[in-house]
Structures are given as C-alpha cells and as structure tokens.
Image (cartoon, rainbow, N blue to C red):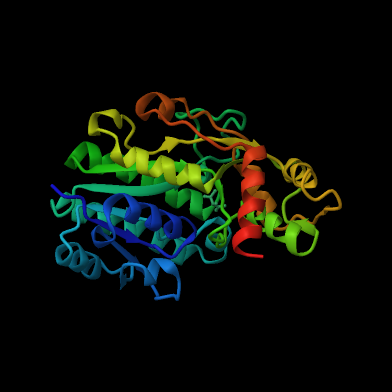
Length: 316
Ligand code: AKB
C-alpha cells in the first residue's frame, strides 16, 4: 500500500523541516501539510496544504478520508514555557489532538502514527545524569504531565487495540531553518542568531544548566527512521529516549567564541530556569540504538559550525 502522509502542525519548529524531508522521500503529491493557519512559507507554498484545527476530530477524519492517508504525524502542541502560562488550553490541545488521531487509527482508518514526546516527561525526582529509559517519572510542568499521560495512552492503544503508534522523547532541538516557539530550550537557538547579529546574548537559563540537546537534522533523521523501521523492531510503544549531546549555556558560549572571539554572554534566569532544573541533564538512549539502530551525526562542535555556515548563507 502506498504511503500517504498527513502532518498536523506542519508550520511549527519540527513540522517545517519534517514536511520538507517527507516530501523529498515520499513525493510532494503524497504529503499533506496542515496547520491551524496558512502562513506564507515553503511548507504551505510547495505542496498540498490544508487549514485544520487539531482539536476538531471531524476535520482530521475528513482529511484522512479525502487524501486516503495512511500515516499521521501529529506535531501540534503547546511547548513547556507557553503551557505554563495557559495550562488548561495546553492540556486540551496536547491530549485531545492525540486522542483524535489514536481513535482514527483504532477505527482502522490510518495505519501508523508518529507522536512526539519530550524529555519533559521526567521530573525533579528522576535521576538526572544519563536518565534511563525506564525510571521515576514525576513531571512538574503542564507540558510534561501532558506528554507523560500521552505516552501512557499511546502504549495503551498499542497494546489494547493494536494501534501502530511510534514516539520519541525529543531533547531540545536546534535548527537554523525554523525558530522554536515557547520552549525552555529555545535559548540554544536564539544564541546563534544573536551571536551573528549583536555579538552578545543574555541567557534566560543559568550558566551551569545542562540539558540534552540535538541538531534538527538528527531529529528529522530519527523521526524518519523510527517510522520506517519494521513494526516488530519498535518494542517500546510509550516513547523512546533519544540523545545526541548535552551542554550548558556556558559550554555553548565557549563553542561560539571559537567562531566569534568577541562574543559576550550574560545570564538572567527567569521562570524557565525552574523548568530546566526539573529536567535531566543527559539521557540514556541505548534502547533506540539497539531496537532501530539510532545514531546521531552531530555534536556541539560540528552543529555550531553548521549553524553559523547556514545562518550566514541563508539568513544574514
Ligand atoms: C521545550 O523546551 O519545551 C521543548 C522540549 C524539550 O520538549 N523544546
């Protein structure tokens, strides 16, 4: 059966690049991008695009039937910092959009789901270094609670109803193409832009705040890889830990100084510090490496070189 894809939340940080990659792999005519609004960006202009509200079951079901969709990538969500400001809406969006897609799969209308989880599923009582796949999970943010509950539902629908849902716990993602929206790890993207445009940056996390991070190319590679893996290789139906690097604001500033020796860094931690403090510093992703051969290509050094090369070539 031909793969026909629907991406919900295609205009977001991950969706933008994921849509482009999936169109390259599966063909423009087989990938339907959708989001809550139509923006004047490549995702919208370069292929099929539909306006859809991820909270509207009927709209999603209609698109699935109209385009004979087999695989849904549900990328719409409120991230950690924004969710703290609007807990009720974050819970509604993050949970009910997932239920809609799970129920469409349960009804046999689609074959496969990708749903992103996050390191936010862990909390202050989780071991913070090399966090295991299976460990204490007491998330203290609205976003983390919604992702953890979502993971439980994914596993439940997989075990009870045979739904083929696959998921990754993304770390903070860094890209030169798309900007993040409302996350705690956003500083690690902003810093590269500000290094070029202003030669300085004020971090909203403190200098020693280590978090797991990943270059977007690796995140897209992992997403494609987990979705293409044979069904029996996906042994974890909640969500897989995924890791590439871990760094502090101070460490990324040091790396940036290798390219911009006059770069100045200062620190003014805000409410996001508390969120960062509740998350792991690094995660153990050996299950992803064993089950579906995950391997990262980027570390802090080569990611920094790529970020500056691309930002200077395409943006500034
Ligand atoms: C956020 O900071 O909220 C996200 C995430 C780690 O899931 N980037």
